[in-house]
Length: 128
Image 1 (tube, one colour):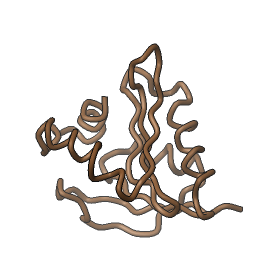
Image 2: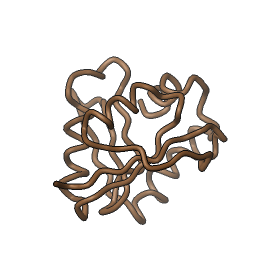
Image 3: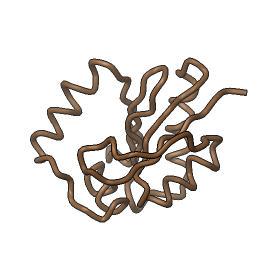
């Protein structure tokens, strides 16, 4: 789900192997982040990865987008935050930009801080 959603969002295949991605999810991310999954009939339809300051990953299955899953996962991250969150999204991913802006995130910077070497946007949200 994560790999397919990302491919649809940025128009390119995942640069890491499936095995490497599974290792990242199971062994690397849990060291510094909380991971929540959204399930529908035992199928993973969404994932959010965050800590108190950063939203590291948020993906929803392509066929499940627009159903409130992303918003529910984002709200979990906000509830567990220190009162603010930052994230990076790819400049090419206009749907993500609209989603985050709709949910109170504002653009605070631009760059190329990713393995895909694609332009990205840094967003920040602060609790009111």
